[in-house]
Length: 318
Image 1: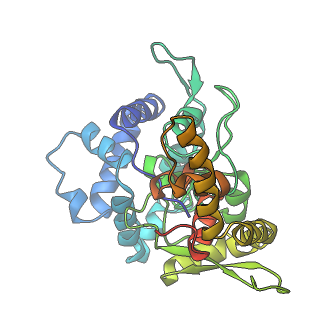
Image 2: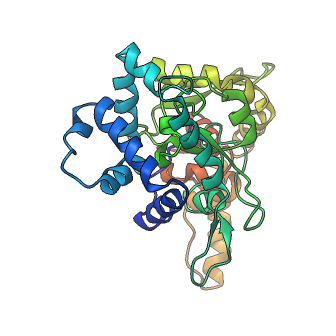
């Protein structure tokens, strides 16, 4: 899984305005009342604030706040039933549930920019280009109104419509991962700020002569193991044994000594031409590709996979 950073404030403002346009004042107040009553002390303590201000806080709540609210509901069966689609306030949450369909297709008009659907706008401003769940498929748009991504409700909107419009409950992902997940529960969201480059690793096996290369995904905790299991990520990456084999063969063809020899040869010719020397890392990048920093894994398919494998093979040092 690839981490997604928070949206810029401008993007949050655009999203909230779109939500306000489809959820009228009366229902906003009803939602706020339920949030204050059932979502824990942090929300009850906002009682003195204006209803619209609390509604904004709810819609734009960080993933960590959403998770706390969800766990708060899970502690009490009565409260949990209250917020489910078929619970006590069924009609209210049916409206809230359906509002999402109107929001995602809403046309955004901004000065100097072409009109575009809100879901397209969000993906463009998410700072990622590939699915954060699998890092295999691009999710970029094909035009202003044709989204390349689907929006997964991390906490199922069919089970808990109260979270249906929360911005950080919406994970832009590929159709394969969205269909695989459906309403199943994952433990860690791509918006989880605790995720880092060491949360899980791709490890090569069977790379000795005569063996069949394969990739194993190792998670550092049971929560990520659950994500990998639900999304069938191990099965997905089993298909990349050929990619692994190519990287192993490339490393065999270009060991460090070979890289240094090529570097010396090129620098000899560059010196004769009065040009600056190249570093061995420049040659390495030409052969294996530039090392993608952790913050940019989401911009290239298989970026995490390639990084971990090449690090294991000794090509990259970090």
